[in-house]
Length: 373
Image 1 (tube, rainbow, N blue to C red):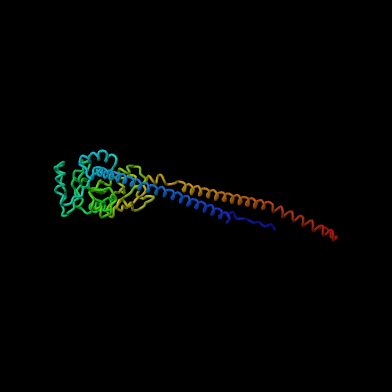
Image 2: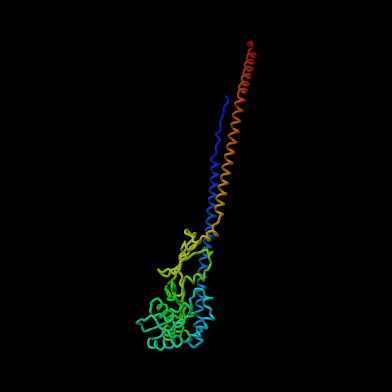
């Protein structure tokens, strides 16, 4: 009897294991590549944030150097300067050209109530319309005596720092510490748009020696100061339309500056790759920075490698699956052809076995002496 067995054409468990391992390798390589690309982009973002901080602090230090130069000029003139001397100093400093964002550089003098009348009379010798304003009930006066360039700053001349707590607190802190200080957010009287600004103070004394706090107050003469509008400061520091970061600066609950306005900036990213929030101590104030990446940052830092690895791996897995299917089909065809051949050969095998059986029977009869029928 001839037995016929048909082997089913199929992808075996071993084939599926190979495909599964290959797919797992592809996904793992894709994830690792994506993590490396994200880490590289995050490093770039962190470097840009650090660069932002460095640029801002470098700019602020340049402004502080200008204040220190003003203090040095006053000391060189025995603790006092005339309007003409201060104008010459400001011209040599070229404030508006060399220090973008600064509205000017000036002198604030501390005037006790007993000396206020003589102080005003002295100032009116050069400026007949000089006055200390606004009026207040205090006994200590800190008027802006000089501010150059004068153009655009006329409203600030004679303004008394003691009339408003924000200005006065920072001015007193500078006096008591001997260090550079900035005020909290204010609107400059000379700014018609009333944008957020601040004042930058550095004190000067009758002596240049290092003093104890009580001696600082006793020998304090005044402040060299510079008024700022924050938006102009940032434009002068970071004037670049192709920036990779946008940021916002706040002082407490007061927003000083913000680039988070989609309508004002085409490069603004509503869904940034990265964002960060942190605080910096800036000359006696705590500024909060909210920073996020721009569309241009994403363009430069999105890597195509992870997608290429994933697509390439899926293609390879597809080719492996195709190869297994082709091999399986080839095996199926070979088995089918073998079955067909067996059906052709089987009748001949059966016939051949019958003839041998007949011959064997005849030979047995001959041995027994039986006649062959």
